[in-house]
Every structure is written in structure tokens, then in C-alpha cells.
Image 1: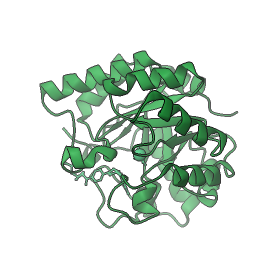
Image 2: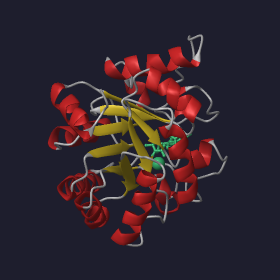
Image 3: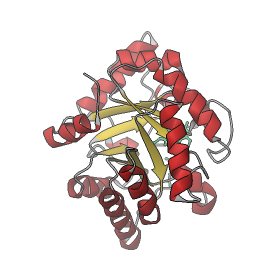
Image 4: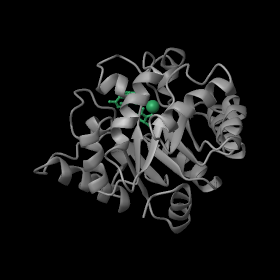
Length: 264
Ligand SMILES: Nc1nc(=O)c2c([nH]1)NC[C@@H]1CN(c3ccc(C(=O)N[C@@H](CCC(=O)O)C(=O)O)cc3)CN21
Ligand SMILES: CC(C)C(=O)C(=O)O
Ligand SMILES: [Mg+2]
């Protein structure tokens, strides 16, 4: 049975963890599908791992559409989530709707993800009211790297934690159906996950999120300078399919992430 927004909601309620990985092409999409990955994300991290760029900032909407369409051809059950790239949605709700429309009509995405908090809530509401499922992304938002001053943990300290809580509630209130939490302290992510009705997907946010996501190349040991939250799942496995199945299993049984993959 296909994974839908309703499936994810019910998984949260039942305490079943959501396994997500990125993919950028048909061949890997098939491998993820075979391993029963629940949510396949065509991330703008393709700027880093496909194009070799330093950040996600230069990634274009045309590039996202192309990779999303490639991935779509390899999927059957998984929910296909695609990132809106930098400056394809920040200008106005109308711009966001046009960009999301391309990811869904040409890329065949089921849902789009955008970075940002309360300031993006009117855009989220505009999309959701017009039939576009939206996933939020809070904490370390890589499109803002030049503003954040690097890839650093977010939400440390009471003021920053309160801002993150307010942002999360604003996104949920606006109709977001899913929320990625990146590089935030474990206790804060746990609290957000408890307080929100919508599922949270963590990356460097501890084991208490409703699901986990990693960049595929990171999970396959291809990152020479991995962040703390990365584990190489290819180690000890004979092929890519077994490595991806091990990731799904570790997310489902709560053995990944371990304490060493998170931030206090
Ligand atoms: N291959 C890849 N994996 C990713 O997870 C990823 C991308 N690319 N591109 C876009 C962003 C950038 N991301 C990053 C990159 C580096 C760190 C990192 O090295 N963090 C350090 C310091 C954290 C701190 O103490 O403040 C770490 O050790 O985790 C985190 C997230 C996450 N995203
Ligand atoms: C790391 C995930 C959450 C992402 O946004 C991406 O791959 O672009
Ligand atoms: Mg992204």
C-alpha cells in the first residue's frame, strides 16, 4: 500500500518510526523502494553530493524537477518528497505555488519541503489551501548557511529553543503535515515531537523524533567529512541493498541514531 500523509500520521500515533533517505536518481530510488523506505526525499543536498558544490544555495528549480522526475520512475510505495530550492519560494506565496506546482506536475512529487519558521507560515497555508502537501524544515536550515555562519547546532539556549517551538507550532497551524528537524538538541526535538500532532523527521535531532532521514551518500560512507549525525551503513554489508535495509531496520528498532550521533 502506498505511503500517504494519513499513513505517516498513523505511524506517529502507533509509535512506528518513519524511515527516510534522500535519492536523486532512478537506480537508487529502486533500491530504496525495495528496502521499504517510507519517505524518499529529493533533497537540494544534490548540490553537494551530485554537483560537488559547497552549499545548496546554487541549486535551481529546473535541477530539482529533473532529479525528482528521475526518482519518481523508481518508486511505487514510498512517499516522494522534494525540496523547494533557495529563492524558488521566498519571494511570495504565489512564487512558492508556481514552484511547488512544477515539482508536482513535472517531477511527480507528492509533497514539497521548504525551510523556515513563522515567517513562512502564510506561504505554507497558501500552498496547503490549494492542494499542495507541505513539509517544514527547522533547526539547521542549510539554505541559510551564510546567515547562520556555518553548519552549526540550532536551538541551544532558552531563547533559541522557544523560537524553535513557536516556529514549529506556526508551521503546524498553517497546515504543514510533516516537519524535518535538523541539528537540534535531543531534548528539544523530543519535546517538539511530543507537543506536535504532525510527525517529526530528525537528522541530528536524536532518537525521539517520529522518524529519521540521512543523505544517501552519507549513509553509504561516501562523505569524507561526515557530520556527527552520520553513520556508515555500508560497513559490514555486502551490497547497497543490504546497507539500505540495515538503515531502515536501525531506524525502525530505534538503534539509530545512538547518543554519539546527536547533540545535547
Ligand atoms: N552530504 C550532505 N549531508 C548533509 O547532511 C547535508 C548536506 N550534504 N548538504 C546540506 C546540509 C549541510 N549539512 C551539514 C553539514 C555539516 C554539518 C557538520 O559538520 N556539523 C558539525 C558541527 C556541529 C556543531 O557542533 O555545531 C558536526 O560535527 O556535526 C552539519 C550539517 C546537512 N546537509
Ligand atoms: C538533509 C535533508 C533533510 C535535506 O533537506 C536535503 O537532503 O536536502
Ligand atoms: Mg534540503
